Amino acid sequence: MQKFLSVLILISLIFIPSVSYAKDKDEDKSAILVVSFGTSMPEARKAIDNLVNAAKENFPDSEVRLSFTSNIIRKKLAKEFNENILNPVEALAKLNDDGFKNVLIMPTHIIPGEEYDEIKNVHAAFKHLKGKYGFKKLTLGTPFINSEPDCPRIANILLERFKTQLEEDPETGIILMGHGTPKESANVFYSLIQVALNDIAKGRFFVGTVEAKPDINDILAKLKRNPEIKKLILSPLMIVAGDHANNDLAGEDDEESWLNVLKSNGYENISKYLVGLGEDINIAKEFIRKIHELMD
Image (cartoon, rainbow, N blue to C red; front, top):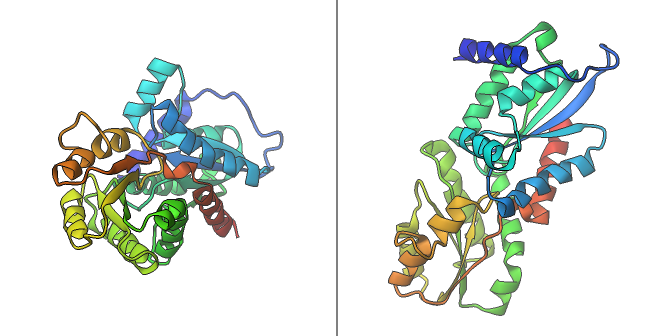
């Protein structure tokens, strides 16, 4: 696998044209590569741009660039919006070609699932390269919830995000949809964030995933154990409020959407807060904190 990635990297270096060079070959140029799954929805894109802009503002001495891991989204952006965003392999090759020697790869993922593993593979392949096609220092950051100590920090951000609604109405519960991953060691973080939320806001938050466990049926079971919750707010536990948030979570026309499943189970007072976590000022601060931690 590593040999294959190394060959792919070298091919990328060959086919990406040289457009700029370091003024001094001994000069150490630094860069931050923000890596996201991506989105083709203009409104949802604000969440990613917010994190990129936060990095630019807080690290003015570093070049900040963006990469998307989804080839489908990248191709759609190129076709429909004439916007060319490189994948992580291409983006790192371009940074090398532009003379950057110290690079920090910073993911925007919530948990270390399969998408993050792909970034780890790319990082490992580039670390393997020596000489002029290698980096002097190449660091890989971690997702927002990468260890148990991360859970209380994110839980408090979520509590602050819905503080007004929770304080104004004790009958309101917040339903959060995460993406989920087949990787069980990563998926367990959704249960851990639920535990952290229970510690600070007992019975007010209900965490589920669209592609793993816990799912909407698990949320329904928890709601039945909390009959005092009569009003619901649906919101994504994702950096971007994209297709999953607008369709799987809150789709009016999708019979299997969480919105319609909840309605069919007797919950009529349901509102939506379809704003990606990336737009939250406190998530942006956490993003910057994690970068500082790596740099220190």
